[in-house]
Amino acid sequence: MRKTKFVLIVSLLLFSVPVAPAQQQKIPVALESEYRIRRRAIDVVLPEYPEEAKAVGAQGLVIVAVHFERDGTYDGMKVAMSPHPSITDAVDASLRQWRVMPVNKTGDYRLQGELRFRFVIEGREYRVEILPDEEQRRTSPQYRRIDVGFRRSWSKQDWED
Image 1: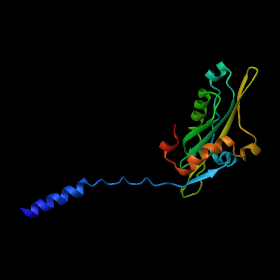
Image 2 (image 1 turned 90 degrees about the vertical axis):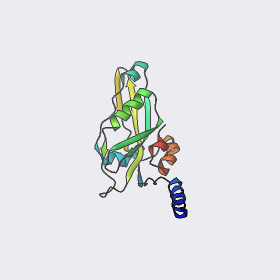
Image 3 (image 1 turned 180 degrees about the horizontal axis):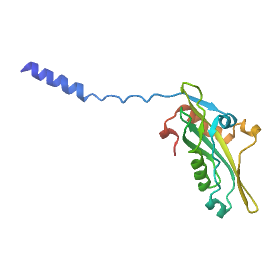
């Protein structure tokens, strides 16, 4: 009887101790300039100018921090600056179709960096432009402000609004 009580008590203690959840393995992130990301791009789709943005005359520069998975597929973005919510949605929709070359052959790294698109209205013409190479090589101040959080974690909970 004593042995049974002892086994029962030990069993209860063992099974009632909270077990820490397994730590999510952190995969290193390679930080690249916009220029390098655009050179790595295999499949590229420029955003379409949204009708809603056209109707209100929204134009300007969109700056996003993007994540690509180890296999080069788009994983998500964080908006640093955008002139209109429909323009933000158009950029996200286009990036979902992007694919970039993986950072290395073994797929050890995810890719993160800045991408910018300029939405322009001239008269009755609506167009989306990418920045010249010289500007792509420089990091914008808006991106630098959100970059710190991206460097610390890849968990979407940490960088999605």
